[in-house]
Image 1 (cartoon, one colour):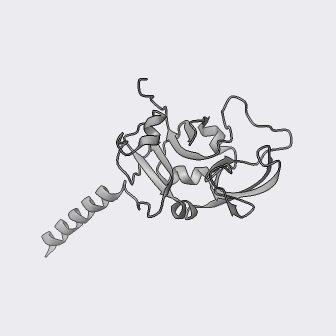
Image 2: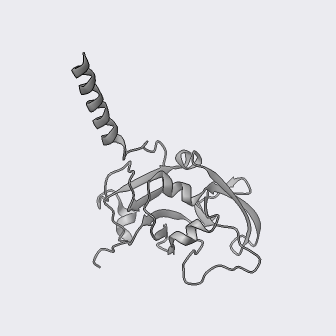
Length: 190
């Protein structure tokens, strides 16, 4: 009986190890893809035939994780109340904490680039992420952010009274975020 038990444990361990880098797959429309230096995946590598928007912005990846809205809502949520030039008023934003999204995919401690649906790109270094309350806002004042309304995902954080937004795209509040890249992002040849 003992050899069968040992074989069972070896098979179980192999199954767990094989599935350790995979998580649930989206059941609804994908809102966010995270690629680059990550340990956990739930989708295949970049495919130029099906990833046309990524292709348009020269985004490629070997490892990626796709999130739908329910998956993002299952992560630890944060709340940020801040006045934005885009809205012209103070609003309360809610959404998953950026560091929780990165932890969920086993992201390396590295620069994170954020790409919007229009091709705008901002970035954060690891200290930016660790030292602020960045969230990937899904709502403003309890209402979902839609396309054309800085959504469906808007990177925001609290600002101290003396603090202003960066002009060099470092920590820029990218709205309509569709893709995060962990690590240096290689561009395809033009």
